[in-house]
Amino acid sequence: MAHASPLTTDGLVQILFGSSAFQMLRAGSDLGLFTLLHRRPCLTPPEIGRELDLAERPVQILLLGTTALGLTVRQGDGYENADVLNGLFAEGTWEIIEDLVEYEERIVRPAEVDFTASLRENTNVGLRRIKGTGEDLYHRLSADPELEQLFYRCMRSWSRLSNPVLVEKADLTGVRHVLDVGGGDGVNAIALAQANPGVEFTVLDLPGTVEIARKKIAEHGLSDRISVRATDIFADTYPTDHDCVLFANQLVIWSPEENIRLLRKAHAALPDGGRVLVFNAMSDDSGDGPLYAALDNVYFATLPAASSTIYRWGQYEEWFAAAGFVKPERLPGGRWTPHGVISAVK
Ligand SMILES: C[S@@+](CC[C@H](N)C(=O)[O-])C[C@H]1O[C@@H](n2cnc3c(N)ncnc32)[C@H](O)[C@@H]1O
Image 1 (tube, rainbow, N blue to C red):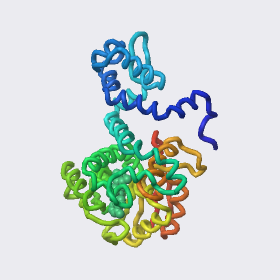
Image 2 (cartoon, rainbow, N blue to C red):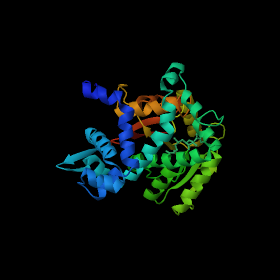
Image 3 (tube, rainbow, N blue to C red):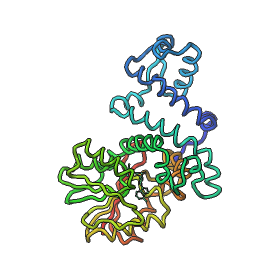
Image 4 (cartoon, rainbow, N blue to C red):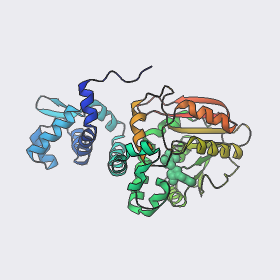
């Protein structure tokens, strides 16, 4: 089934000026327009100018853009946020969106100019925009402490945006100890530990990252149930005292061959009946959507590692079988991001 509705000329305008549309979102976020209209809906342009300390001309430019894009709505002489934005403020997600805007601006945008070259050369050419000599984004971040801090703060926000799906779909009934492979700053282990009081977790990640995780876990008072271990997830063997292995936002980074290698390592570490859970954005088996996966793929194709991409659901089933797992089960998240869980059993 085709996803997209037929292209209109307005749709073509949005694509042609796509980065300008993003700049309207970014300016409205950075200048505080959306937060202002959340606190005080229905302000006139002069009131907005006074509150944001902007002259008449920039207020006109900003409101023309945000309103034409549907981010703000005009009511008589005043302006208010679109319902979608009001919903994000109401559920406490707006601060996450602001981090994502910063991530897109400071990490994705400088590299995405290399998208065409990345397709041509079938590798992440955009990595050249990041300082250092590491062969993937994660191994380069330690060369730039300021970028590293920004990256992990924003990665946490990307994960907080989508991990309610993981918490809802990952059934940890009967599970004793989860191994979170490449668990970053522990954001998912923390959320799962809070939702599953009897379960313990071990987070594996690179040495610098597990130190960030250790602090976050302590801040949440969970150091007694979540431990961390500096590990190279390809080179080192995994501990065997776990009955569930989680790959969260991990198998989008590597090639199919590398993913099968990681899944085989998980299989070797699990007891019979142990479970593997994969959580990340998925693309449809039809290969033509959803739009979120299609556009987020510019980042994946350009920056993290040589073969990163948002894979189709069916590809995980093939890799599970190749690694010896059975009973694959798809658990789509059903939210506005295409995140879902796919699980299997040893
Ligand atoms: C996209 S992030 C996902 C982090 C976390 N699972 C989440 O969902 O927020 C990928 C993680 O894999 C880690 N990683 C990449 N290569 C690794 C390696 N060879 N060994 C251990 N960790 C690695 C990175 O440091 C990073 O924290």
